[in-house]
Image 1 (cartoon, helix red, strand yellow):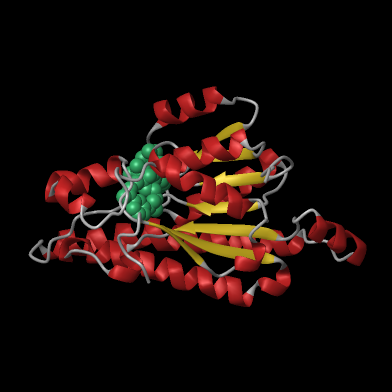
Image 2 (cartoon, rainbow, N blue to C red):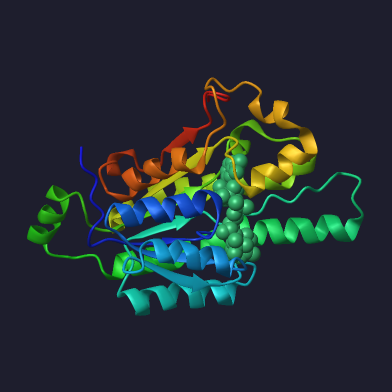
Length: 268
Ligand code: NAP
C-alpha cells in the first residue's frame, strides 16, 4: 500500500523534538505540506526545516496562551492556504509530587492542562470550523472524495498509555490531562462525523525522547522497560508511520479509535 499525502496540509504541534519531529518528517516524506510548530527550540526546528525546505514550514507559538493558539492556527491557514490534518502532539509531563508546595502544585496543573488539553481543544475547535466550512456540498465531489479517500478533515491527538492505565502519583496530572484528551477526541469523532471530521487517538507507552529521559532519570531505565514485549524501547520513528496512515484517510472508518503504541506493555 502506498500512502500519499500530496495535496495535504498537516499541522504538527511540538514538531521540533521527539515524536512530533518524527511525525513532521514522515509526513513530509509522504508528500505533505507540513506546518511544523515549536515554542523554544528554534535551532532544532530550523534543522528540521532544512531537511525538506519546500515542504516543511515553521510556526512558533506558546501553547499555554489560547490567543497564541488562535494566531498559530490562522497563520497556518493563511500561509499554507488551508488545513487538512491537525496533529495535537505538543505536550508536557511535569513531575508534581503530592508533597509539592501548593503554589508548585497549582502552577503545574495549570501548565499541564493548558498545553496538553486547552491548546488541543482550542485547535480542534478551530480545525472543526475550518473543515466544516471548506467541506464540499457537491455530491459528485463527495463521491470523488470518497474514492480518493479524502474529504473533510482529520484530527490526530497524541495521548498516552497513562490515560488508560494511570501513572505514578507524581504524574497523575499528566495522566488526567491525557484522559481528557481521549474523551475530547471521542466526542469529536461521534459528534462531528456528519461534518466530515474524523478523529483518532494515538496512545504511546514510553518513547525515547527528552520527555522520557526526564522520567528515566527519576525512576530508572528498568521501570521504563518493565513489561514491554519488544527487544528495545519504542523510538519516535515507531510512532510516526501510524500517524501518517491515519492522516492519509485510509483508516477513516476507524474514527474514534485509539491506536496503542506501547510494545504490549498495557493492553486494554
Ligand atoms: P518532547 O520530546 O519533550 O517534545 C515536546 C514538544 O512539545 C516540543 O516540540 C516542545 O517544543 C513542545 N512544547 C512543550 N511545551 C510547549 C508549550 N508551552 N507551547 C508549545 N509547545 C510546547 O516530548 P515527546 O516525548 O516527543 O512527546 C510528544 C507527545 O507524545 C506529548 O503529547 C507526550 O505527552 C506524548 N507521549 C510521549 C511519551 C514518551 O514516552 N515520550 C509517551 C506517551 C505519550 P520546544 O521544543 O520548542 O520546547
